[in-house]
Amino acid sequence: MFLYDVDKAAGRTNVYVGGLTTGAEILAGIRTVLADPSFDPANPILVDLRPLERTPSIAELRDIAIAVRTGGSVTGARRAIVTDSAVFQSMVELFITLSAGVLSEYRVFRSVPEADAWLRLPTPP
Image 1 (cartoon, helix red, strand yellow):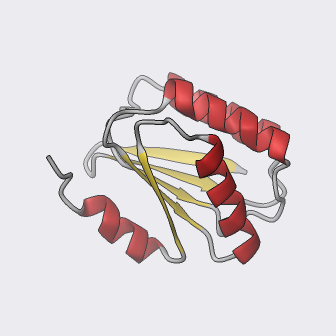
Image 2: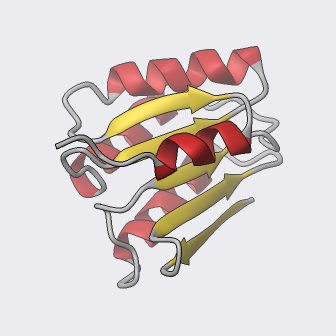
């Protein structure tokens, strides 16, 4: 399952990835978000991976990182990724490494409130 919501009132995009979603499905979901005319890559993004049950392969992570780097990266834009799994935290850290050179700032959190608080902080000049 890959769901997203462009919340114009909050100025943020929320992404939920769960179940046995494959890397190909995540990549297709990312491409859908990037093509959505209401999506603004300059706005913060919260990605909730807590319901995800399947670990994408390194090759899938590479493809996802390339898609994000080429289509959804904006200088200073914040990306909060939430996971309560040590395995997925390591996976996300690998994703961030594979995304090296992106302009957006990524952080991994264990809870949505913690991620939300960071996304709401003023962007430094």
